[in-house]
Image 1: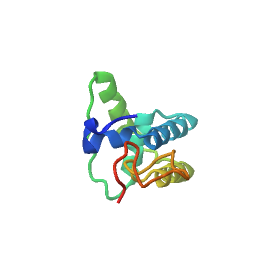
Image 2 (image 1 turned 45 degrees about the horizontal axis):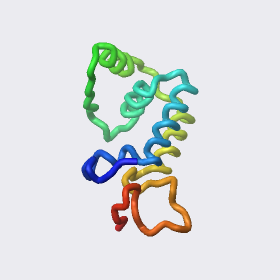
Image 3 (image 1 turned 90 degrees about the vertical axis):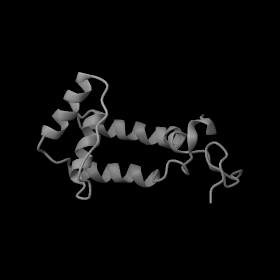
Length: 116
C-alpha cells in the first residue's frame, strides 16, 4: 500500500478499505445503470447541506458526463440511497479504516500511523 510520503491527506483514500468502498459504489452504480460519476453527482444533489459541487475534469467527455448527471431530474431511488449510506457507514474515515484489523492490531492505521 502507500507510505507516509503521500502526505497526510492523500494516501488515506488509497487504503484497502477505501478501495473496497469504491468497488462497492461502482457495483451499486452498475446495478442501477449509472456510471460511478453519475451516481456520485446525483447523490450530492440529494443532500440538502450540499450547496455546490466542485468539478475537476481533464477532458470534454468528462465535462459532458458531469453536465448530463446534473441535467437528469430524477432523484436516486430510496433503496439505492440507503445502500450508498451503508457503504459509507462501513468506511466513514478512510484514514482509520482497514480491512486488516485482527487480533494482531496494535492501534495503527494502514501505513503504521498511530490511531488516537
